[in-house]
Length: 189
Image 1 (tube, rainbow, N blue to C red):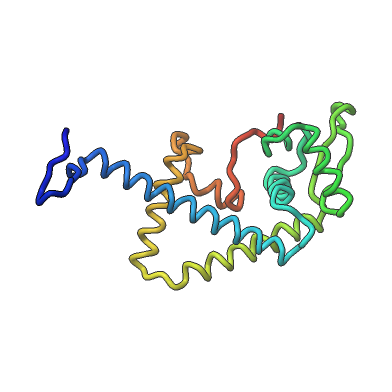
Image 2 (image 1 turned 60 degrees about the horizontal axis):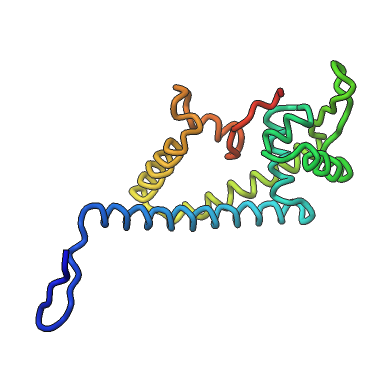
C-alpha cells in the first residue's frame, strides 16, 4: 500500500491488527526477560548471603539432590542438562566443600550415587529462605489488584511453557516441591 501525503508529509498506514499483536508480543517478551534478570539477581544475592563460593549451577545441583534424594551421577547430569564429566567435576567441588557425598551404587559398582549432606541440605534451605524473603519484599508493595494480575499472568506463562500443562496435575505443585526449579528429566536414570 503506497504511503499517502498529507500537507506535504509522508504518513505511514495505520498499524493493522497483526502489527499490534507483534508489538504486544514484543512488549511481553521484554517484560519477561526483565523479570527473568531480576529473578536471577535475587537468586544470586540469596546465594551470596549464604555462601559466597557457591555458584548458581552448583546450587541447582544441590536443589535437585534435595528434591530427588541420592541419585546416580548420570541422572544428576541429565537433570542439569550437562555432560556427565561436567557433573562429575561439580560433584568433586561440592564434595570437597562438604555439601554432597558420593558412594558406589550397591547395585552396580561402576556407577556413583551422589547425595546431600546435612550441611548441603541446610545451605539449600537457607538460600531458598533468603530468596523467598526477597521476592516477598518485592511483591509486598503491590496492590491486591496488581497481585491478582501478576499471579494470573505468571500462571498463564507457566502453562504456556508446557512443563506440566497437559498432565492434569497442579502445575504449581512441582514449583512448590522443587522450590522453583524446573523438572525436566527423571532422576533415576
